[in-house]
Image 1 (spheres, rainbow, N blue to C red):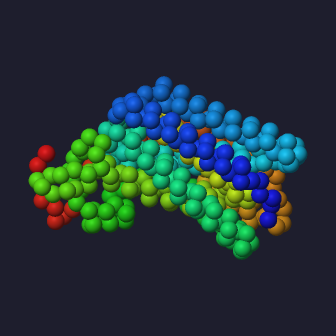
Image 2 (image 1 turned 135 degrees about the vertical axis):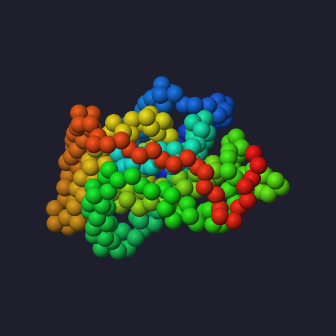
Image 3 (image 1 turned 120 degrees about the vertical axis):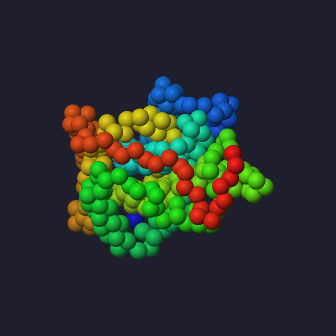
Length: 336
């Protein structure tokens, strides 16, 4: 098992830093209230979160250099940057699915920010638990690495084959289960998650959207967490790179939401990266692919697919998602 760099002091400082960042973000959101996030605002916040991540990896490199030596500091900093980039790239797929959910439920732009904030809080808690459990499993059962690797190769192939196909949210089992077990109001009531119609307490579509966003993140975490373990098995690096990638997810959504059709080939690049990372994990005991190679390969593949997306027009327009109008079959029509 590779050396774990996380000391109690490092874990404490990291937790305090993330908590402070979330509080600043939360209070800024509350002060602004419900409003449509502009492209400029999204770009500024995206740059802020990237800068924060760079400050953290700079501190990590400086701290480890003084306590463990420059070789360890260089390795861990490179692992963090590679893991951060892979998680950011995989998060693009999350963003496009978020966009599909928001479009399907016709979520007003001014409410989307609040939904994503709660989604990020849930994602942080979920990732922390899954990463710590994954690290324990790897420490106890080395063969799980091969299982992770095979799963990533399978996921990459599946992603390649599914690229270009429009997901059918109407047939989603989670949405069907929610409709069977909850009374859902036919319309929104501001930013409220629950409302009362004709004396009956109902969940608003906004609450359903938050549930679906959480389920989407669980699905994507199953892919992304094994991917980061293929780069490093240091729990501190795995968790910190994941967390910093997620913290900027909300700003990145508003930055990329209007560009999803322009990067129509990006999913092919993500599929190639997943297959590469899975293969790297399968070859772990035969040949260890250097972290620098992984970083370079990921950057080149994503850059090439993004450039090709801009140069090669999509074959057809993506089918528009359906507006939210469905309700439980046994639910009477509610008055607005």
